[in-house]
Length: 470
Image (cartoon, rainbow, N blue to C red; front, side, top):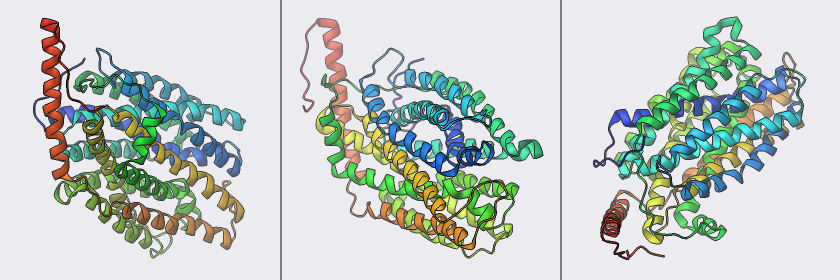
């Protein structure tokens, strides 16, 4: 069901919730891919730790080329159903099939099997993630409303992540080990068609006037990367992905083997970590509206260093202290993705004003690519480092103090340094609320003229030229 844009700059909450619903399965699958699947393949299915790390790295590196191609294709797409709606509907079945093949896998699979189906899964997830992010940029055009919309998307994603974490706990002993991963797989597979229906049926889609007939080229891609604002966002997004990405890959190993928590306790701690993002998403969205998005990100980077460092002060196997500690880390780190995504939408408006070209899909492809680079680097390097220090990931294995120390250093202190670099990129940021309001004013005037010209052309056959930049 295609709709026109709403006249109000603030989107109604029911529309935002319907649009955000697809974040439920996207976040749930992302969490399992980052935290549970590596251990599932290395622990329950018998693949070596190095083999799993190499497989994830290979897939991520191959996947890097996919997002820019998808972004270019989405920017060119024009159908009567909208630009991004068809892509969401195409991505859903791909994710469902790949999730079944990976989450329901049994011992005896090969590294080639793992690489093949990881590629398919990442393709489907890339389509869903990129289509939703780019659609959100055209759905919410106001500087502050974007913080609100992306905050709701983040909050809904947190709900999806918490639900999938609670699933093995609710199943008790039946949810342990491989059975828990199987249950998570079915949860995601069944959730995808329901949320896609909500999003595609009840969300309006605003397609910007086509002021340029030029095709996207590699030169356009490079020009976007060279833009000062976009270069900063790419750099910051990469390092803010590297930090939490390292902790995600090592989470189960760290809290179980280094800190002495049971598997059930590590699952419960992760619920508090992810659940904190529900509160954090609302808080950081609010703070971004009050002090500006770039300042909110700088604050979050400093707060992340403090909360992450506190984890080493907490005595091992002390749930009463570990729960607030993990809640604090989850609360702070929830700022990174949602604010960066909202800032990309602002840059997309500036790009369209200056060039007359719609590049929102390609711009989001750039930042989703950096996140994938971050994940590929963290899984590959951290697993390799653990292998070098002699850490054994097998169930019931005994590790040396040196191996445990290497695990602790990788989990706690490396992410702090990485996130600090990301936050520093926003010092001196210029595309604030005042500048963006002027950009939107000029775009709205141009779009109105283009709409009038198109109407006159359809009625009288007289074609008027618009003054969009070339």
